[in-house]
Image (cartoon, rainbow over all chains, first blue to last red; front, top):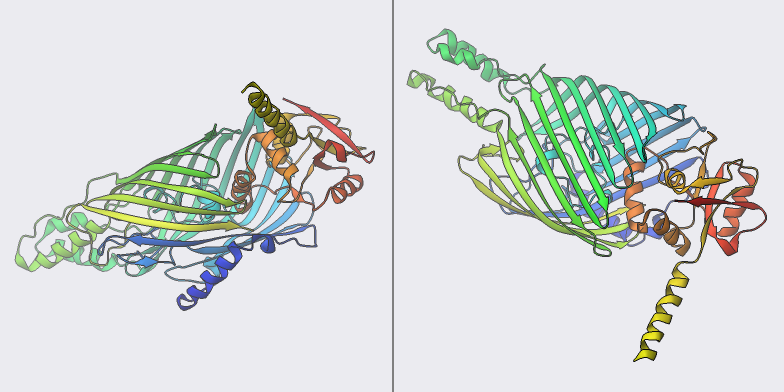
Length: 414
Length: 140
């Protein structure tokens, strides 16, 4: 599942072959207790900007003014083994272009599920917990309307599985199904800023409550975790600010505690989807709060409306993200000897501010029962220095920018 | 003109006659469950429960992917196309939330499977029903 960059072209040819031979692909295993399923996407993305790199998630490297086949392409395989009516095992592997790859990162899920009762399930291992409406199938292009997830909402949340325990209870309620689950464990994700920082979420605890029927799906979730950052490049800056505060620039001390390491982060989210009379409407709202001075957190949301016209579903959506607090401004240095420190500090502060919104239009065409073609045009407005979600090799940009991102994909399941 | 109208009406009726071929839900003859509500059938086939209302395990069977009966069944049950059902199941399968119905290739295999499995439930055309299975009526 670890794909070196140079073999991506072969990978796409393989995926394309799969797409047009879905009947061949339908894996019918002879062992009735064993099931093999898969999904994949071959996606082409083009951004219009040379300085601000578009990416779906902060774990990825950005796409600049170029055509890219890597970012929105993937291939997933899932094996389920049903040992009994009460006990089953699942393993899902995902091949995707990552800024750093490893077998561990390729394992999406690996868990054992025990049905304690018809209403109560216990899962142990690496599990998908559904912190947001689409987070536990975020890489399955065929399962969604758009070519990619709304970047403003999902971009800062690249967490896949939680290594731990998940308890789920479901109960019929009115004409639908009420469900609630609770999880505890740890998770990891990468944050790419010219270098990969691994964000480790420890003591991760979360809970969700929801109700769904044929038309509605409503869900509220809460997550909290303690962060731990490897490759913490903020540390030397903190030390320099600390030093300056003792030697002639006391104000610098106020900014010496910038770390995002070992801080509490809390996620609150609400989501709703509606599917009736050929109308598909979906919206989510979330607030992420951290105890760090550098980034107090973000608020983000999206709303998407689609209309089925036979096998084609055009859609329009809007999404936005904004930092909870204004961008940090470093006070003016008392003398020229601190000018460099002031500039470096401000450069870092600028990198941690988010402010952008996007309007997208596109369509999904179900060409075959297991294959969909999609295209999408995103118009994104980025605020001054508001590019936390984007890849900024030259630092945040001091002016407002507009990006046009075009994407097309073939999504399939087997 | 009237004749033309009558012809069109006749064509529409005969066409809808074909597309509305009666699809029935069938189960093992020894299954104590004799009737289900439409909602209970939906819950079983859309992965919301893996149990019959009396608490015994339910093992739903799908006809093959290209089957017209499969298309009709889901259209009548939840008013969705096979593509929509596939996208729905992609969400459940790949998030590990539920297991889709097992697909069997032919009506003979389906009937044979139901005979051997007390917990099996399937849908077939009314004309394919044999003495080996019982029809489970379901209403809105």
